[in-house]
Amino acid sequence: MSGSSGVAAHLDDILYPPIEPYETGFLLAGDGQRVYWEQSGNPEGKPVVFLHGGPGAGTSAWHRRFFDPEVYRIVLFDQRGCGKSTPHVSAPDADLRYNTTWHLVADMELLRKNLAIEQWQVFGGSWGSALALAYAQSNPSAVSEIVLRGIFTLRRHELEWFYEGGASAIFPDLWEDYLAPIPVLERSRLIEAYHRRLTDPDPDVHRPAALAWTTWEASTLTLLPDPELVGSMTEPDAAVAFARIENHYFMHGGWFREGQLIDDVAAIRGIPAVIVQGRYDVCTPIMTAWDLHRAWPEAEFVVVPDAGHAAGEPGIARALRAATDRFGH
Image (cartoon, rainbow, N blue to C red; front, side):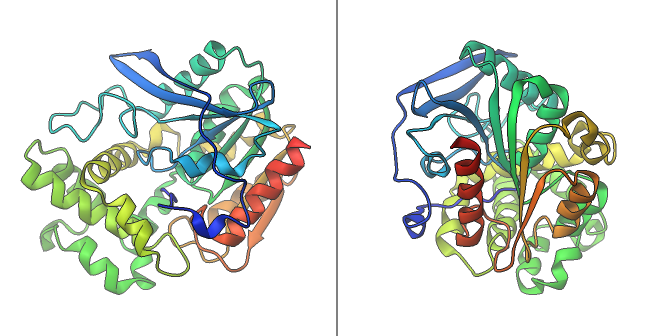
């Protein structure tokens, strides 16, 4: 689950001004993977790591803007196979064997140590919320605070809601376009049917499937339609990497035990946290955030009444900035 936005001009009154990184590099993560990372803000500031969605969405320049650049040392990185990381999963014969949740958790620890960071705030939305929970539950001593948005934990009923038909109750028109590439006889297991097409090395097979998969998600992220967001997410190479990586993770349930991220919350209950959730989120409905809230009452729970899923929706952006301001000042 994503939640990126193309150009975030409508957030100028909510987020911090645009900034450029003061350092960029590639983490040599093993398995031939080069993971792009960057630092911006204050080199002596409070460390925070931004975890993008998807998986497979990559980071954007506007993601730096959730954090006060005078207070925070802001670390962004593109998870394996997407964004500026290589090898990029849009290559026809891309190999996803070395792309799992636990590879990403290990990459985060390697990056933290390479940057000589003792503790960092972990900030993630959508798939980034799942990765944040997985990382923090594995490495609680490395985490100073947690900020989560649009909670997604990859339980079977969460995946079935959005990718197997539940959300078609709300977007039946857009659902028809998501169904279109899949023959009628394969529509009882859509994630698997898409997997067969997305892993086909023939671009004439995997590209149309990736575009349909990504368009469905991009079109349903926001409370009100956002054509600019759909356009930015459906650039062909980005869409192929996004759809392939997402589908690969969903086929494996994120390599989690069913319910793991909520069941294992005891490991992080002592870490200050904020959970931000849009009331009308169709991608990751509030049911999951509510389950996490019930398991973790110590975390502040913020429901944005006029928002869907995307971090770029004004109410969500405002709540996220309020969380980082509170933890930073």
